[in-house]
Image (tube, rainbow, N blue to C red; front, side, top):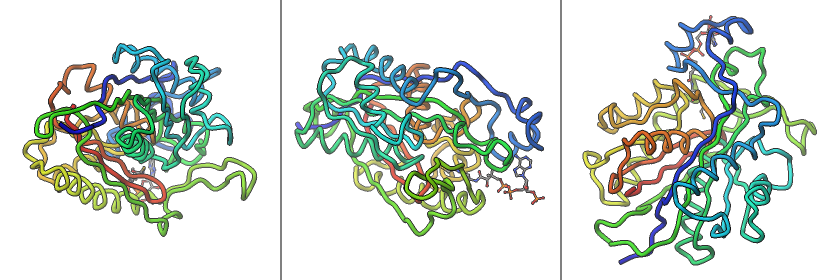
Amino acid sequence: MTLRSVILGTGSALPRRRMTNAELATMVDTSDEWIVGRTGIRERYIAGEGETTATLATDAARRALDMAGLAASEIDLIILATATPDQTFPASATIVQAALGIDDCIAFDVAAVCSGFLYGVTVADNMLRGGAAKTALVIGAETFSRILDWEDRTTCVLFGDGAGAIVLRAEESDQASGRGILASRLHADGRYNNLLNVDGGPSTTGTVGKVRMKGQDVFRHAVVNLAAVMGEVLEASGIASDDVDWVVPHQANARILDATARKLGLAPERVVVTVDRHANTSAASVPLALDTAVRDGRIQPGHIVILEAMGGGFTWGASILRY
Ligand code: COA
């Protein structure tokens, strides 16, 4: 037996308001045909009055706790991955903690943009196996709509808002066949900061800034880096790519998903795709897609699942687990 972090529940939340490509075409010079053809995105959800990163995160967390059958009081660690916190400080994780009525636990945010959930999962897994905590909520939540330049058609059509959460618990697991996270790998390369960033911040302009991206350059790096890091977790876990049941990728662009799967020889029907409905929700995209595939019955206990993401920094990472 070995101590592993096991997913006991998943949950997600979307804002009330759905925005189609047709609606976007009334705001900037774009078309449904261009957006679907280049990205696979058909619609996204946009946060409205009273909806924030922390409210969406709290809703997703409650659903994950419900599925796990656990009371919020059993949580002793909250890691919230976001690039769009409610406030510069305190961490939105503490807002979620208060909303869930948890008196005392470890709570902090991680900032790794679209890879944030993978960073959060990896940190939580190490803290759980190291004994710092027993039961964790790892959440990815974003309201990117609030940092988009709604006059820049090269970025505003690509992103959406939402949240996803998992409950992870440290459990003794059979070495060969037991559930839990089997291996994770993280990377960052800050030389590429300028390809995907926001043009502001508390310590520079004193504003939050707007998203800026050189899309084609990001695309090129994404396919190479994601295929490489998925190869690393396969090797570290000793699992062959043929034995992978599901890949739950960061949902940035349907063409990146296809190209990455092809590079690894994974069948496209093994890739969970929600980018058509959610667009790119940054740190929320992996847990949102995971929850979708768990709740519609595709991902079953015992399945081998790879989670992967790449984002601004660049940062990127992957985890492989037995669900
Ligand atoms: N509607 C219509 N036309 C648009 C447009 C839009 N929303 N956005 C850009 N265009 C135009 C461009 O101006 C350009 O016109 P030009 O040829 O007259 O200059 C043309 O479409 C092609 O633009 P280009 O940027 O070369 O398109 P692309 O095929 O690279 O697709 C992305 C653009 C952004 C969809 C693609 O590069 C991408 O997905 N990159 C990765 C982004 C990503 O994953 N980011 C997040 C990582 S976390």
